[in-house]
Image (cartoon, rainbow, N blue to C red; front, side):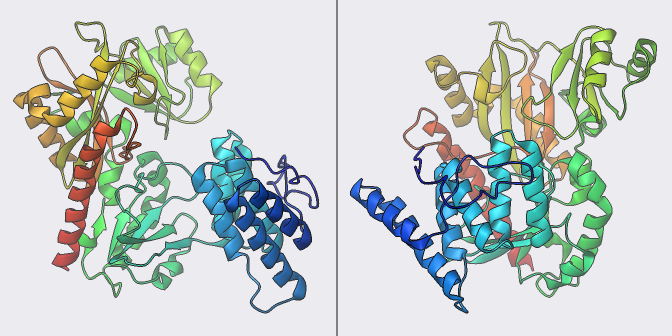
Length: 465
């Protein structure tokens, strides 16, 4: 990461409430010109241009120019943010907010930077500030042919990762933080061609159900939308994918198995009460406990006795899901977790994680370091029918139909009899491109199949209007 030795000079860092950034940029235009010359001398042309923009911006504010604005400086910060130079990006964003405290994008990206660094309280403070300032964020670029309104939850994680699905070269993305928006703002939105409900986590969407229903009702009268078909991923369908509802939703499908699961809003008072609760839910030990609205193994623990489980529930506040644990280890001693993405109910292969541990995650399964794992994943991607068998494929197709979501995904494994065992199925599933020169580049054509299918879906829905 590039560091600016003069970050600490000049100004007190904005940081966030209760947090001081380790560095800050000066407010003196002459100092930025000197820094630009120093950057250019070392071959850092990007840094030089950034400091020249800062000097021009500071000059405009100092002179009281009527057209003084911090947007170019905010673009500098965003450039570093997109590059992954988050510390420098934060310093630039803080300079932007020193000049104009109302730039919501700067607050929004500072929230992301703090969250990525594990400073959750600071991230929450910046996020709150961002969405109090602004609820609609328009990402517009030349050549875009479609305007997509994206319903987002600004105050919590749980949005569908839509960057790959909605490429900015084609789609003008209008992000709407509806959880912060008053109902009257629905009628003030910019024009759009269709709506994608990106609030895919049922635990996040649940408290917003009435608000989302009111939006969907008003959508029918919107000038740009005369039919509810333009709303992709209906909130009611998202709600059905809560973890404790999946067994009832999918459990009666042929060749599909789902572990029993219950939701616990508060820790039981005693081991006896917990044992009775599990018995009522038909769940035997061991049990998988995970906090609500979490993914990627965050907070997930396997508890083998009631006392350990009860201690776990008391350690972390908030609702939890308790699922019956099932040992799905294959004959070779490895656990496998397949992921398929549903686009308009049709399944597309996305990845396969293979791990010696029961908690299987793609990022920790060391796929890249084992040629045999990469080869097995390639075979699954290239020919799911051969890898899974026709029985499993038919079960997966039935799951896609039952979910009734325009975009969703499923994590699952195959049981010895080739039935599908569901880990989870919902709209928050990630699908993204890999580095074109990296060891996972073989996935990219299959990601493209997903993106192309979603593009066809959007064309069909908008053409129907």
